[in-house]
Amino acid sequence: MQLKLKKNWIETTQCRVKYDDSRLRITSIREKFGLKLKNKFEVLHELHEKEESKAETLGLIEERKQKKVAVNNRTRAEKAKAQVEYTEVHRAVKKSIRKDKKDYIDGLAAEAEQAAYNSNMKQLYGTAKKTVWEVQQARTTHQGQGDLPINSGKPTREEIGKAITLMKNGKAAGLDNIPAEALKADLKSSVEILYLGGRRDID
Figure 1 (cartoon, rainbow, N blue to C red):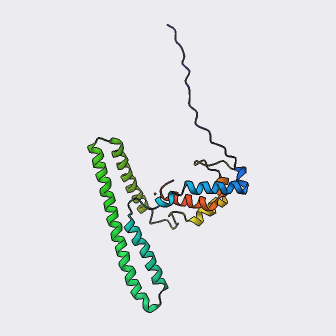
Figure 2 (figure 1 turned 60 degrees about the vertical axis):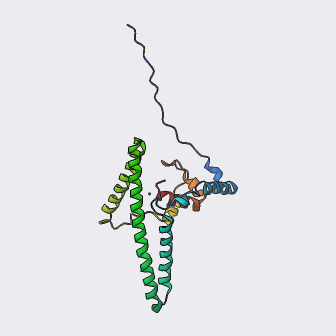
Figure 3 (figure 1 turned 180 degrees about the vertical axis):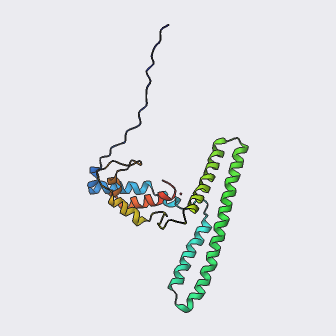
């Protein structure tokens, strides 16, 4: 009996792309890059609110902000009346948010039920995974609220901008494969993209 050895091909992982970031020093190219970046991520501005929030609730939240500003800008005599108006709107916002969350959960349940009925396991698994992830996020947030005296909330635009400016040029890109020079080319757009993207995990 004669045996033959078969060559075992091992797939190598794709190497990182090296960008010619020296061209970003030219003002016209940097401006074109910033414009393309803004146009590409313009959709994020529309998606940064939570999925379960509806237009009516968002309108109420905006109204509540205006009422709060009105309370702060009134004189002492007018402040009591403005405070009553603010309290009413605040209650309406809370009620509307509760209703939206209930509708959202009911919608997910109906979606999962329909997927199970149609034997669509991919959709059923996706809905279950989404629901479990949200519960885990809420639990993690709740557990971490007690002991730490640090601000563990979402970073502000100023903090993101400061972090980008402190990045060193000429270093290897991170896991996202974006070099520091590309982020610094149009700082305002980069900050906005990272701020909005962080909310949807690019919540």
